[in-house]
Length: 254
Length: 254
Image (cartoon, rainbow over all chains, first blue to last red; front, side):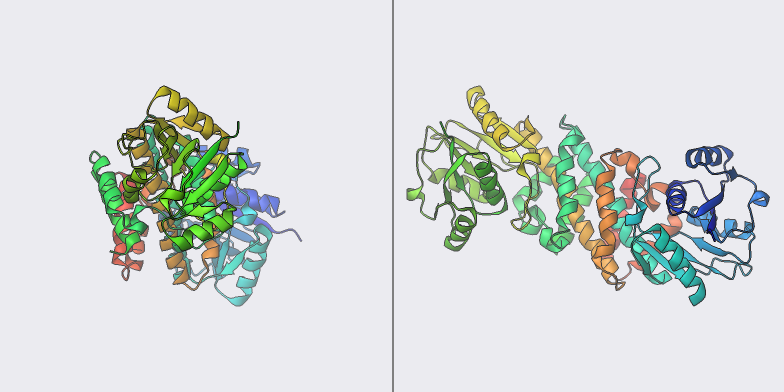
């Protein structure tokens, strides 16, 4: 019997999730979006029907997947019906306590990845972290997750929150450092392009070495002369100066 | 006529540079190292003869390349002879004023990359930034650089210092954030492995999007509830808390 799903949300995670479901032969019955324009656009892009009306959502799907912002999650969970189905949210920071009583079969399918609509991504490589309200629901969630990706891990809410926090450091903050570096090279009339090999090598190095072994630069060498010159170069950027000082101290352990 | 070089230094940059010279059919006549053990090891690894004695360095090479720490550079430049040769240092933060009067033909060949001895790397992909004491020396340095790598740019000392600073953000600081993220997942009894796809995708995203477009996470969404929870999770790590607050503020622009 074919597995069916309804997806609530039209953002980056929802978009990539719908594609992954379709590629795994899970039939996506419908997409819900609060905003008519976004819902129409996502539906057209993904070849799925969409609605902005809770009453029009099918009630007979196997899975209801919620990929909405954390603060919309509780409200959205109150709207859908389907008490027999398995309801899964995809949020790193939210626990199981959010699910209302009329959704006894529930859980989490958290993809540890950064998604942008316009950047294609092989969902099979995304590590999925699952949690569920009971062992039999967990078995079903594991089955669904294995259809979508190669690496599925069980993680409780506490572990998942820490994973999400780790992801903020390894992805969101890293990306912001790319932005700062880009700002600095561009102020030297050079293109962001010149940084790409360095960025790629930095990320690929840790496939061979631990980040501790891979660490290079003036802070780990405690090269105070270079660090002083760098801080002076940042005189017009007090915010970058603070970041420079704080991370350098954290690297050198001073 | 074959191009010849002498390399001063036995560290990460020197090692990768010697390999690149050998692969470009530049004959490396000798390697100088201050420390006997390091010099012997590098020489064996690279199949080059080495010395710890300045007097034994050949004086007839076309290029003398200095890949030593910034604070050793001035002293090292005083030791070598060969007034007709071209002398090049490889340091991001140092200018041309370091070269003594008896080395009138000099310049810089700065590779914008992170090097670790044990991690192989295709030197042809490394962006090289060159500068020289005169147009005719610059032509020679450009020729050597083009033998080694595909992208060669001219950059004055001021631009190169800013490039080096940018590299600290895009590489050294990024790597340290990987270390922090690894610390956090390991404290959740999960392996650093689970972060690799996220790290790879974060680095590869900026081949498609600018870092500004690629930015995701609670800070760019100004999701205060999630950020508060993250800070609470970091109560045992005041240092990580400070980094979290500072970079989040820098992302959100508050």
